[in-house]
Amino acid sequence: MAIRVSHWCCLPAVLLAARLTPAAAQIPEIAVERHLARELGLSVGDTLRLGPTPDSVATLVRVAAVYEPRPDPAEIAKRERHLRMHVPDLASLLRLPDRVDRLSIGLNPGISSDSAVAALNRTAFGYRAYATAAIASESSQTFLVVSRFHRAIAVITIVASAVFLLCIMLLKVEERRLDAAVMRFIGVRRRTIFGALLLEAAVVAAFGSILGTGLAYLAGAATNAYYGRFFDTRLIFSLITPELVLFSVALSLALGLAAGALAAWRLVHTRPLVLWGRG
Figure 1 (cartoon, one colour):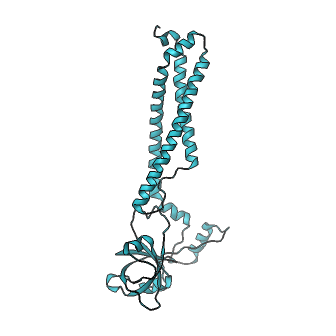
Figure 2: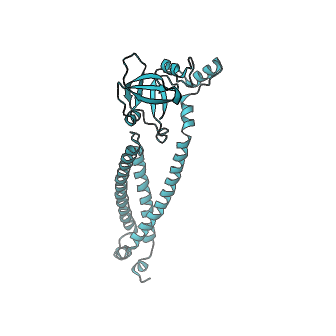
Figure 3: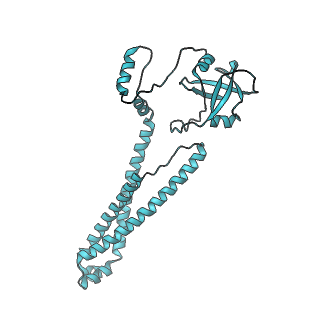
């Protein structure tokens, strides 16, 4: 089976692995990804043969560790499997000494990544240095498109919800026409009626916010449980942050109060006889 091979110093290659019996010799050690170890039935101490092509599977290696890869959204759908080798072992296996495809360089605190990239690119030819922020930005273009698509859906949903909420509040206030007419006949001021209807709208909006937040947490938990099991990963697919909850609650209250105020204003500015059905 095809396996993506990486290592502790970054030199990827595609190798082929075959399960063998352990050999009593000093052989190179590798670390195998948990998913690959489970699929091939590997465990620490097992011996494999590796090779760059199907007809050259001759290098003996021993499984020294089984590791859990870091969750990566860019890798979740590729279904690739990885194992790691030391750089000298991999260079010997590929017969490509003193050669790497890519490597990463750590900088001490206080050193600008842009200045380090510029200095490296001026030093020699044959390679190109990039800052991690530039690489992350380039590799995240797909996620940016998806994020914008979700933002557009969210805006459409909010607008539709606001219209629906306004219709509900208008219908609810229309049911209070007779009550409002009686209060107007007995001398209750418009401001008092308006405040009572606005308070009712605020209570409804607050209750809806609490209910919506609870449904969001349940939906997020169900999404993470399903896709975490489907992809066998600890990656978080649905994340509900306190900032998002506060924004949603504030938006819900604002829309509820606006719809309630508009419906209440329409009611209190209608003549009592019209509300009673005699005007």
